[in-house]
Length: 162
Length: 265
Image (cartoon, rainbow over all chains, first blue to last red):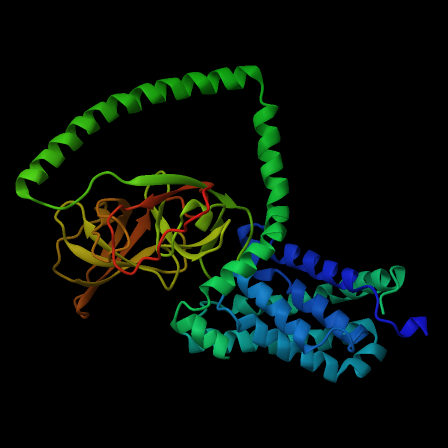
């Protein structure tokens, strides 16, 4: 009875706030292109763990917040994250049973998908990107995924978010 | 999709963006906190000798600057008098406000920074931003407490300039690299040399005329092309500045948003 009630919304919200902070934390110039997509990873975790609570709508809102924080075109990340959340929810049953390294590979592909959408939109509005380094975040995101997954899983169990 | 098109093509969504930016400002302030705290600590824990030394240095610098200012004031008065004689409409007095950069990273592939002054301080879109050495950028998004500045080195930024020596006009485009601006469409026989100072020409209507922008670093006339390759180095410390100056050029232009009423900073 009690386990079916949604609870821990504040924790989910707070985890997104932490992700926003990590996404804007100043890094040295050489490290900036390698910043993992923290918000996308957080979104992916909640989509896999609680697809009934964190869905495309939450992804869209998180993306909108990223647009405002990063000063990109309003709606650009919103669209990308909405599609990203949809893809995560589509495969969440498989992802749940994968071992961590295989999850990382899947996250790599999913983040590339998300980056490609942002890249296309940039291309449509005429903002060309100079280097291949643009794609680095998908690699670093896949590398940090196991830690994000374990941390958020512990948080979810500790605060019994359901 | 509709949202992106609207944002790209027009200004309807600026208020939405401003509202969201206000909601998210605490996150950015939190990220900035360790940096402001460390600089505060640095200032408060500085030794007495260091403070005395700095004080002496600033005092002598102040003296020199005031000496120069006296000359400047007389020159400015003379300039205004002569302009009045010529019936020219250029104004000299401009209002400025110091803003501090907020230590947050934005999109790594655009050159943008966040500053801690917003529409509550009467900042408006398109406002010129300078630092101590030269032109820094212009305001592109305004929220009540903060605003986003596009640097002159951004790929999408172009700035009308002229050579201070002979008044040759050109457009300085950003390259995405903080140490390079590119001057487009300079004929190969144009009178431009390495070391020339570029100043704003005021033609775009955004930047007031006469502010230093960059120094020409490389001129490469290529006889097979119609235009020479000209590269300039921005004078402003685009990647190191911590404080910038917001300028109100002070001429009533059509199309500017009305200043906010009812809320005094």
